[in-house]
Image 1: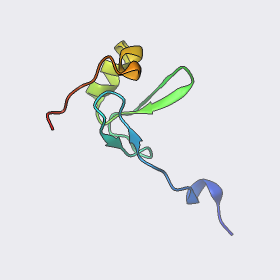
Image 2: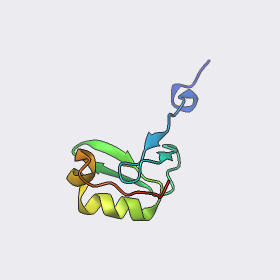
Image 3: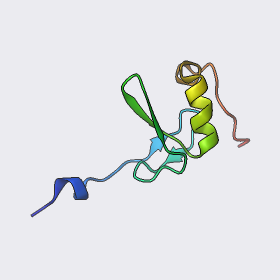
Image 4: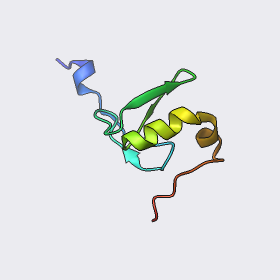
Length: 68
């Protein structure tokens, strides 16, 4: 017997601020909900930046360059 909640495979999410892949099970920067959608963050700084200007990051107008 499978337990659906425990057997679900989680896919990584993309941090909307810096573009890094984030583990949705344990996101280091936490989560924040905007317009009914949950966003996942690589670190607290990206989470705070997104909370201040979510529309700028979602539109692509703003983006944090991680120096790649």
